[in-house]
Length: 475
Image (cartoon, rainbow, N blue to C red; front, side, top):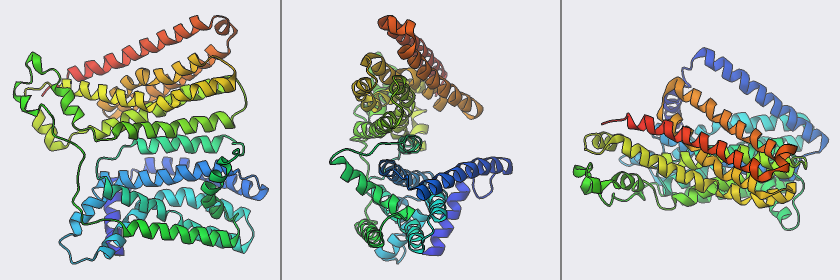
């Protein structure tokens, strides 16, 4: 099983371009990674030595790292064709027991997450070992590095077996926002009953840092292994893959797709690719970004400009999470795409319908962020309307340019990514000026209308550019 898992993992590295990378890019990436990891090691060592580890920050980072490990395994399995359904289909003709197949899946998934686990958890462990001189604490940290990644790996396998539908890259975007907030903001202690939940969530991090009592650490690691075994034991590796996608209700009309009465056919073809509960998934991803916003607002200094800047800046990851999630769900298989190009349906019409569906999902993804606006306004003692505009206008402003970035290739895609980042930064600066400038605060309605007008112009330009690109796409 070990040799088979290593062989599959080497194939995955080759697909990702990591087995024979470009040397110049490799040196640049390694230099950047070394600086980030060295900074992480220094921060962990300082926090452990000085005893300034915040349970709230630790709980936030525990959740974010676990979500990233799960998303990493799901996305790599889909990209390289080594997910649970594919591996189960591959080994089905072989005389292997279910236990051995589960062992193969666990080894392969652990190898998929090994690079991330080695970099992040390994750096945290190094910092903890340098800051913790006790032998018992060092042994606790060493055991935690090996055991703690196993439960997220088992969760990813169980998820992939139960829902073998395309996985959204937004599963990485949302927890990255949460991790960034947990690293940069100094969070206060949680109040009341929430403190108990925070302590429970922070327990794995305390074990990794060697800050728990030996009995607590042993109990946590044993419970972790038991939960991993229970998830793997319930894994049904022999079940055939299924899909929540239904047949298009008007697929029979493809032969007459250019008739005026069939204008909604493209929308039907997009809608039939959307699985059940997709809106709830986009809402959940947006809730993670909203949690990151709340963490940043609570942990930042009590300045009136902070909530406005946070909501305007995090409108980008919330929009990207919803848009990328729906775009991934509505992606057509290569065979279906080739078949549709042979029908009379204009190819650009399908792209426009898909963009509308993705923009709708982006709006859904920013709803949790918008719900934070009244609370954030009360924290900053200001009107909530500017904060609501900063959150809700984000999808309308940015989704058009995100669609352009997904539609173009190579250098143009990178340029569009830079443009989207610049637009998101400019919106955050504009909202900060509206909140703080005396001229704007003296006439808040006029300043808000100017902000809305600027957002409308940017949105029209982005959606117009995407319409021009999609109109040039023909069969």
